[in-house]
Image (cartoon, rainbow, N blue to C red):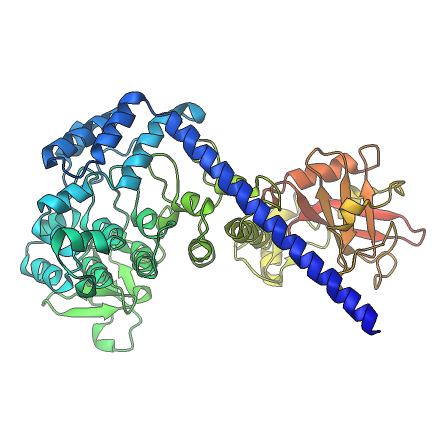
Length: 561
C-alpha cells in the first residue's frame, strides 16, 4: 500500500512538473511572438517618422520644437490639425487611422508610439507650460483644484476649464490626472512636489463632482480606460477608472432638468431640480434645487423632466471600456498581450468588457487569446477565454420573451430551440413562437456505431470526474435510463477531420469521422459556436433500447455540465 501511494504521488508530481514546464514554454513562445510583432510594427514605420519620434524623445527640446514635431507626426496619420486647433474644448478629429488590415499598421504605429511616449507631456512639465488647473491636477493638489472650480461660478467657463485640452496630446484634466498619476517620480523631478503630497484619486473625485466628462478622448482617441486600466495600471488608477465608469452611466444628463421621485423624505418628492456632478464616494448624483440648495440623491430616484424616464434607463450606447481609439483598439487589447491578471478580471468580470470588437488590423480580443492552443496560453488568456465562454452561456440562457438572463432556464419542450425564464413568459410568447415551432424529433439524427476507438490524444480531454482517463465507448452513460435525454459535449479538431463526443461522466465517449452519419451536421453546429471559437458545443442525446444513439442538433448550445 505504501509503495502504491508513493508511486501515485510520484506520478502526480511528474504531471505537475510537466504542466509547469509546458506553461513556461508557452510563456516563452508568447513573449517571442510579441517581440516579433513589435519589430514588425516598428519596421513598418517610415524613416522620416522614426527620425521625428527619436527627436521627440530628446528632453532638451524647446516647447515649440516638440509641438512642431507632434504636429508633423499627427499629420502623417491623417489627423486634421486645423480642426484640433479650432476645437480647444472638445475631442477634435477622431477619424480612423490607417487602412484596414496590415497595410495600415505603419500609420497606426505612429500613434501608438506617441501614446506610449506621452507625446510632449514631459516638455510641458519641464517648462511649466500647463494652465493653473491642469498643473494642480498633475501634482495631485486636490485642495487647489477644488478652490479653482468653486471660484468659477459661470457654468460655461467652468465647462471650459474641465474640458481644456493640454499638450499636443490634447489631454483634458481628467485624463491628465489619471495618466500622470503613474509618473510620480517624473513629476517630482520636474516640479519638486513630493509623491506623499500627491492625491490624484481625490482630484478625480472633485473633477467628476463638478461635471468632467468621463468619455472624453485624447488626440489618439484613447479614454480614461486606456490610460488607467492597461498593463501599467495601479490600484489607484483602477479605482479612478471605476469612478469614471459609474459616472458615465448618467453623465449625459449633466445640467439637465430632472424630477425627484420615490424618496423617503416626502418634502422633496416631485420637486424639479438641475442635475449636477457625480459624487464618487457615495455613488450618488448631485442635485441643485431652485433655491441653490444641494442634495445627494441616488440615480434610481432621479427622472428626466422631459421623458419622465429614470436616468438609469438611458444607458450609454457603448460601455466606456468598449470605446475604441482611432486604431480601433479597446483597452482590453493591450491587457490581452500582457500579464496583468488583475486588470483582465477588472475589465471582464467587473465591467463586462466586450471581446468581440474588431480593431482596424482585423482582429478581436477573442481571436487573440484563442490563437496557439492551450500550451501557449498565458494566465491572462485563460481568464479572457473563460470569460468569453461564460458570456456565450449567459446568452444561451437569455429569455427570448423578456431578454432576462437567468441561471436556470426553461426550454420549449416541443422544439427545444428557445429558452424562457418562467412559465408566464413562455405562455405570453407562444402566440409568436407557435408559427415556427416544430418537434425536436424531426431534427434528430440516429448515429451509426463508430469503428474508431478514442485515441490517446482524445483521452487527455475526456477525463472522468475522478480525474482518470475515460475508457467509455459508444454506450448509454452510467446513471442514464433508456430514452432519457442527457447532455453531450462535441469537440472538433482544428482540421475538421474528427469529432470527439462524451457525456458528463465520460462513460460514453466515442469519435466520429467524416463518413459517419451526422458528422457534418454536428460539425456545423460546433463551428457556429463563437463563444468557444468554433471548437466545441453541447447537444442533447439519448440511447434507445437497441443501444442506438440519437442526437438533436437543434439543441446545440454552450453550457455548464
